[in-house]
Image (cartoon, rainbow, N blue to C red):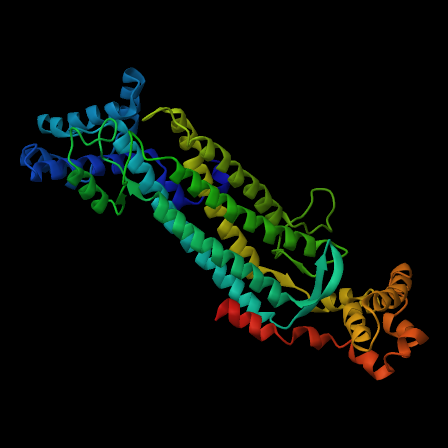
Amino acid sequence: MVPRYARPEISAIWEPESKYRIWFEIEAHATQKLADLGVVPESGAKALWDWWKTDPKIDVEAIDAKERLLKHDVIAFLDWVAEQVGPEARFMHQGMTSSDVLDTTLAVQLARATDILIADMDALLDALKRRAEEHKYTATIGRSHGIHAEPVTFGLKLAQAYAEFERCCARLKGARAEIATCAVSGAVGTFANISPEVEAYVAEQMDLLPEPVSTQVIPRDRHAMYFATLAVVAGSIERLSVEIRHLQRTEVLEAEEYFSPGQKGSSAMPHKRNPILTENLTGQARMIRAYALPALENVALWHERDISHSSVERFIGPDATITLDFALARLANVVDKLLVYPDRMQANMDRMGGLIHSQRVLLALTQAGLTRDDAYRLVQRNAMKVWESDGRKNLLDLLKQDKDVTDALSENELEEKFDLEYHFKHVDTIFERVFG
């Protein structure tokens, strides 16, 4: 993982020492249950836990040195533990296979990482809600195809983002439940040499659920769904980031990232204030989405197991979760400190001479008896004059001068159709739907 985009808490989950500690806990819990069942002597489990209570330092370098010789990571670890614990360590790994340790560990790591991601999401939701309430009635223009459409409020824009990330949060919780399964079922998942009771016990101790049926591995459709979920969250991060990037463009400038004292935007041009954080988020979102494809390709393994998925997951497990953690925290910070310019929003709405009210005039003309096609044609022919004048002409003035229009609508009726507040009459209803 690139340290530039990594935060300590989630990174620690993927450190080798953390991984080996989880490996030990799985092995020790399994040995404990085997002792309870009378399969191995109680002294075997006791020796493991007695050593563990000393809070030993895991010698990653020593284990890695063994792996270079043995060409097997789990055996290297077991050998190293046996050297620390003594002869009683021989009762570790009874009836188990390496994937029991590796897959259960990955489940623990992903579950713990997801707990952090959910906390990140909560912080982002808090920021979005606060800023949405702040700008609940801050009028701005809604755009479709990048073109002025009709008025909205900036609060509604943020409320939409809140609702989207609330769905993302629910998806993350579902993905955590999907991924948090334990397999301690032996060589091809039949429990031939180890009891299902051991798996159930290990699962309980590691805050997981037993995998209903495994082969030699936990089925990789679970992992595919998990990383696909992270990709969807990344898509939502990019959507909001792109919106902010657009709003910060010089010719728009309705909102912008906070620019801190002493910050510099360009090595060449001292005037620049660039949307570097949201551009960075766009790039991170691309990477997170990229991890979904290899996870999907991991689903189809040979028979009961091969290891084509293993190298993939050594990349995507840490990289996807660490990057998403960083991205969610960064986006929360952007939203929290976002600079918002209501006067510029109003000026942009006014720039095109009232064109944003064209639909209300269209509807009024149809209600006055014109066909929709005739009404559309009357409004459009005046709207195009405003468009072609680059907003120097005013739609209301032109409509008042158009006899075909004034035959159907009075000047007072036309003026009423240009009331900005009309568009915001259901803002409370929408906020109630989103925030309750």
